[in-house]
Image (cartoon, rainbow, N blue to C red; front, side):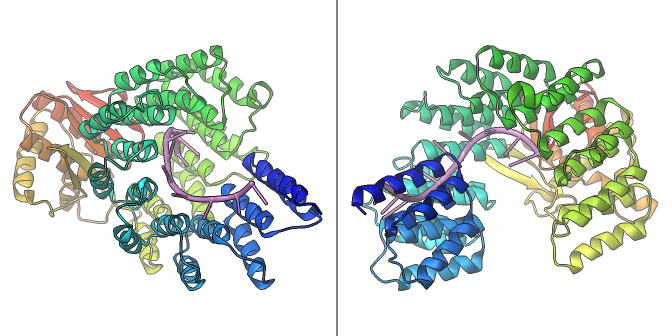
Length: 546
DNA sequence: CTAGGGTTAG
């Protein structure tokens, strides 16, 4: 067979893989009358490109067993496959294989290995490789891998600090990643600084960078900044529209989100699956009169926009129903689904049970969730909290003990604030802050003032079995209360107080913060898992439903 | 002809 034919076949495999047509690529590969190592490598790389880590690994094993020629390209791809599998043990085996393989590592393999380490949780190994990287070599790729690795592994400070230390080496990819970190944490000043830097080094019109700036501003509470950046973009892709719609959702501006959706259609941009998840969700933040519009949209997804509803779309729609119509309708929809509902659907239904305070259906739903994800610690907490809410402490503790016995750890609930470009994070009854003493005594005073202003503690949000008189001790030291107290202590300006919380704000903290906004006459902005709460003069923008 | 890092949602 002439070489040119092998080249053509191989190019076809790559092209199919590029467009996600894995089966066609494989078919082509099998039909090839003659294969060389390049065609194997193309298939291997294609699997990785399409997140088929296991298929890539199996192919690689086959290549080794059959004694096929392995090259730098094969190694880079198999390292990538390990990154997809995120398995520390396999990653070490492949790591060793690459080193033993002999003919020296090149920059691509090294960079892939470093990235693999960050994805398998081997941050110390990644750091070692990073330090050894020759300084005369261009290392914008490994720099970015390291920044993203820190971001992924819960080390946002290291991500930002490395980014700032290597400004000469960062490019648009590192920018988007670190902007994501700023958004997650609510690091407004730093995010703004990075925005300026992005303009300075010429990425003002890079759409990926702009997209992440939109989302960064929205997550930091500046919805106008997000809108401004969006409007300034000369070309908006579907991600830009999605980012703006989700920005409005985060601020519970359902009408504005729907208005952007109309503009998007007028502009002729084809929505994708994420767009529809967002637009359906937007109806949570409108009113009960237009639930039917949402229903119509949901029913016409396939015919009008050629998007097949997935579990995520169902979950979003159930979230809307759960908010505006009787719970039974949401439950019925789950039972009538044309395919097996996944965990996101059950979680949405459970969330609706929370809004309706319906523990009967709630417990039933929770059982499904536990059965589906026995590995997930948050499931046990969900069940435990559900029992606590109805006073069944024994069952509640059993769920927690069950979780501990299995060695799972829950992701702790946290609230944090930013002060002097530093993050101060608190968990419930946290005494680890250097100023803990001052915070607790200040909080005592604040509680007294709020009680005077009419705050009535609601001990049903205490999720542990304790004596009634002890309950308030648990309630008073929730993380959001500690965070707001600390901020009041250190910032005397009239600026709004910004708090970020990684889960939902509890009902008692919500009531408390309303009173804090009265007695301190300061605006309080909380971003929790449901979006923004703006407290001012005793009222919250979420209208007490979140 | 084949290889290394990223953005929107949950």
